[in-house]
Image (cartoon, rainbow, N blue to C red; front, side, top):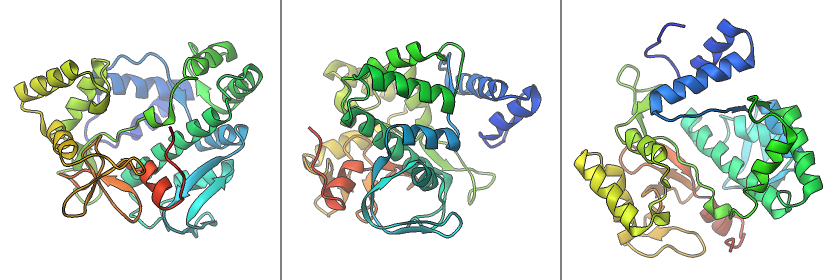
Length: 308
């Protein structure tokens, strides 16, 4: 396939499918594009469509989500009330897909942040039920994954998937972290499209170097080293935001957020500002969505204690 420029990222998957005629072609093309664009060296993929997501959520018995407001989507018929809700696979999939009636704009970036939150809650659900330590449950989950998901050949057997899941059994839900790549409005279509900002390079570099994205988890020498590297490349705005946020106060143990003197809520990991009404984290420089402050939502909207 010839190189393509100024196209939507998801068109890569579609074009790979059109040329190769199957999911393997679409996923391989997408993985190659990600490696070329980021400098990463990914070797395997798992393709999760919405039907597969529905199957996996049903396999763990549904998932709890905290909704900051009533949500009603006339397109799908989904009607959810504010508060802690237990969703089955169909409801959770509609929640992941919905653009309308969410209390926010219907942008892809907003929907991406909500999907990141949902994935974290799915993992939390599996961990809370000890599914990653119970051998019988673990293999049932692995077999369900093989039926529901499209997985590259190096991962596509139950023993490999069960071993991968077992290696995560000690992980803590509050150590599961997602970050939306920093974006800015696209110069060619600022009202409808976004492109990576200069800070995106810093994120990809951190991943290439196998360093944590959260400065809180870095040893002091690594944190200082990254700051020095960023200064050398004049690519330090994201680190500056993080440092400023961390210097403004101590995070509330219940919400995980810092309250500034002027009443703003700051996520200490990203330096993003948090909307008090819906828990969405926004980039302080661009205003774009960065994620969901799930601990804040749980503590304020749903009265769920912080996990130890």
